[in-house]
Length: 139
Image (cartoon, rainbow, N blue to C red; front, side):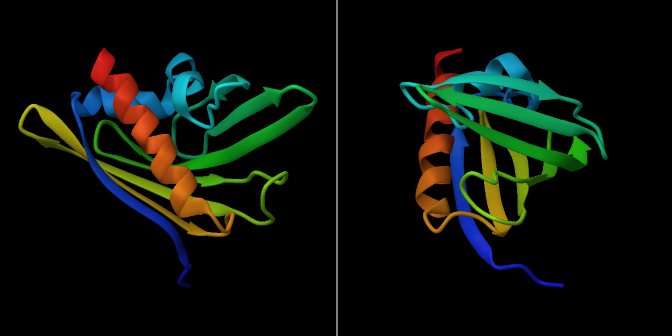
């Protein structure tokens, strides 16, 4: 079965691969960048193991948006894959895959979103991953 690629982003991050990986599964760090906007509040829960779930609840003024999924690959620090459902933004399931490799003092993050997702997925993920890079660059 093949899935349409909705977004593909590759970038260098000034952080160790372990820190980059943890930013995807550690709730206090996730709440600082993943689905973060200047006006919303996030609450994340994770069980980062194959078959484990995650949930991020986004609250912004009068709206509540849920981001839920199931981890399929959890191999720290180099590979993470999970499903993502955000019914308030799109129907169906996005399939997210992240590969992280050490590149000198930096980490190369290769991100791909396939399957279902919003029409502007490329722009949204590019912006979120730029936020992640800025966050980890400060640590």
